[in-house]
Structure formats: C-alpha cells, structure tokens
Length: 280
Image 1 (cartoon, rainbow, N blue to C red):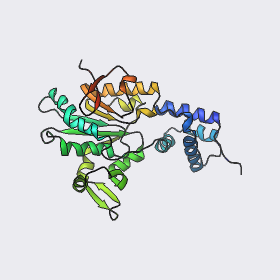
Image 2: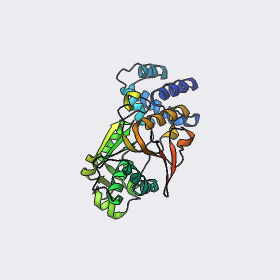
Image 3: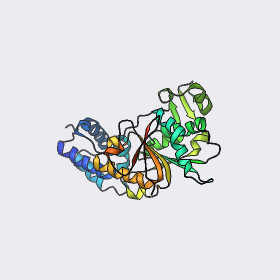
Image 4: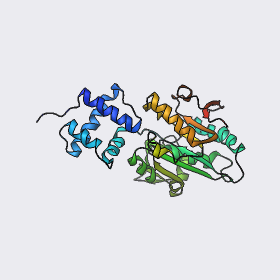
C-alpha cells in the first residue's frame, strides 16, 4: 500500500486555509508537527489523499472537522502561578489603579485568554482570594476563553497532575484542591470551578469577539507568538475594544504590544510591565 504523504503544495494550501480561519500561521519549521496531525485526521476520517480530506474540510458546513483540527494543532503548555510576578503586579499595582476610576458598586471584570487547561484563570482567582485586600469588598468576574473545545472541558473539570501544581505553596494546595488517585492528581474546589465562566472564542472571528466588552484587565500570555503581524494587529484591536478606558493587558514575557500596535500605553510597575488603554 502506498504511503500517504503531504506535499509542499498541500502544506501551503492547508497553512493558508488554517491561517484564514484562526489567525495562526505555521512556519516551515512546524512542518513535521502539522503533517503528523493532518495525517492523523485523514486516517480517522477515512480519507486516502490530502485532496479528498481538504475538500471535505472546506465544505464541512458544521465546521466539526475544523474544530477537531484546531484542538490538535494548538499547544497547551502551562502550570499554576506561571509568571507569578504579573499576578503580584495585578494585586499590588494594577487593581488599585482600576479602582480609582470605579463607582462604589461597580465590579471588576477580568478576561483570561487563552484558557489553555485552566491553570491561568484559576491562578488569577486564587491570587485574588489570597493576596488582594479588597477581595471581600469588590465583586470580581473572571471570564476565560480558548479556541480549543477539549481544553475548555478540562478547565471545567479542574483536574491537574503534579506537574501543573508544582509551583503552588503547600498551604494553598491544601486549601483549594482535593487529592485523587493516591495523590497523583489534584482537583480544584467546585466553588472555584463554578466561579469562572469558560467560553469558546476565535480571535479571528468578529462574530465571536464582538460580545467581549467592558473588561478592566486582560491576561493574554504566550498566544500572540503563534500569530503573524496581521493577526497580532487584529488581536490588539480586539483587546482594545474589549477593555474599558484605563484598562490593562498583560502579555507573555517575550511579547511586546509596542511592536504590534500603538493603541496602548506602556506602564512600568515595580513588579511587571503592563499595557493600558488610554482614557478618552
């Protein structure tokens, strides 16, 4: 039986298609990663050639197969309290600035994107509960979004391995987690699982993003490195529209909003750098 393969032209066609749908651009260095996952989906869907599979993919009106591809093409690598200095900056500097421009009964809204498997939004919630002095006086809403439907289900289960929780202090682990399988897995408490709204969002789809408005703080760490310049600019505009005037966004340590867009003002705090939407 002849071995099925992905040609250079096939890879280019798929890369352009996936980019138009998601804003994610695969460099040539990702070729092996992409080919392997395409061949996996071709086998599972019974297609013997890339042409047959790609035709079915493009004309699949339900987008089910595209979602399957998105789920296996996106990387979800994270852990609790990752880049903790930004969480410290949140409670020590950023939230205080946000409160200066809030009315007494206003809540604070935080958007975490991508959710990945949930470590980041849960870290935000735990940090607020443990280290922010105003948490008992201010209502906080946390929304966390991802393009990958499978990781969103993992988020809602809130079950994690030892690797995910290895940076957590023991007192916090005992306070917010229940151990399972003789201590090999840890599930975050139901109260916290219920406190975060997990949603599916494709940043490249205006129909998805238009409903995300009136946020005070956005965490978008280590996502834009997978985008090209055009997609990054589009994402910056989405975040600008989603933020209240004076709101802030944190990016990953290797990302810079200044190189992407002039919409935001750079703010240097003692613990971290953040980007602020100017007041009108």
